[in-house]
Image (cartoon, rainbow, N blue to C red; front, side):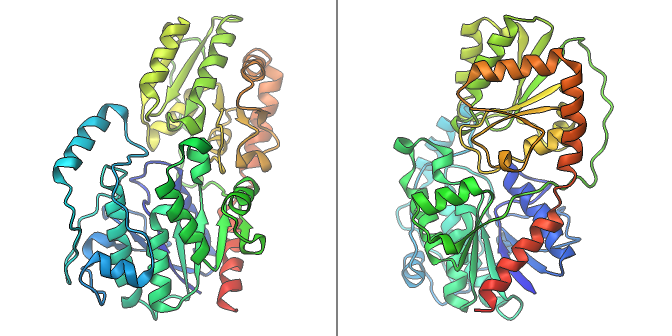
Length: 430
């Protein structure tokens, strides 16, 4: 079986869990005798291609039957949107990037036959423009390789239109993968309707929708009104190959409690701060770390200052690769207080490093993790009690650490990929 897969990022250059999931998934699919042709906007050349063949969209000239985006979009029936939305931008860069985009942006968005586009592959001010151009190039790639794949697989809203274009121009079945929804990223009254429209279009046009958890599956069915028969939940896993068991030396004797992820509304960073303040009223031999960046970072720094815990609270900025492993190695407790988390890979990574973990009940991974402590994201009293208990009762911490390690090591991408292969077979054999 052969798959044309559209993704936005792939290790080692990633911004979050999407690229990590794509890497583990493609390795698992290779184990299950599925060949993957993986298209990404901007490849660096140092990606691990042992289990996948990568096509760099930046190297492919537009070669469709049209010469303008408007004409192309009309043929494939998808939405062209211009926006300055920067969903994962650091706040300090936001103003500068928006102003630059305003100066640069042109009303006539034209694409010429044979033209190549240098994609950033990032989440900048011209993100929607890149999404539209990626769909154009994706359509070209699909036509060029139409005899080399049986099914199309598109990851998250950034690539859905590329998948739709590929389906309409080749007639091959389309599977879209919902890693996170608009309802996860923002409250109902702050949802970006433009992204919502792209998600809706992709799932409407898909032959099957894969959700990363039952939580996400229910959102897809109830919020997007996709038929339950069309939506399949396949939980993520974690690829632990190549990881080092780091031995790090602490410069402090205090215990360390860590939050690691984007500092955004979805991840619940302010609930972590509130819980930290409550713990520090009960014991003073502990430090709290917020590892990550995002649009709420400055707000969180001010919140910590207002609570008077700045001397016990540390902000590291964005961490990647070995830095993440080192942070887990330094940690005594990991906390993921997400308001809405489709799955959540970071607790699995922490538990694999023998770090006892606390997760919100509003996360997809709560469906499969029995040895992580679970609290409601808003219940900072319960969260602080859980942190305090793991720090001050070694027997509980050892049990959570030992059993958690065994649990996450049983969650293999090979097994998840087998379920994904079955989804492929169901749409190919129609």
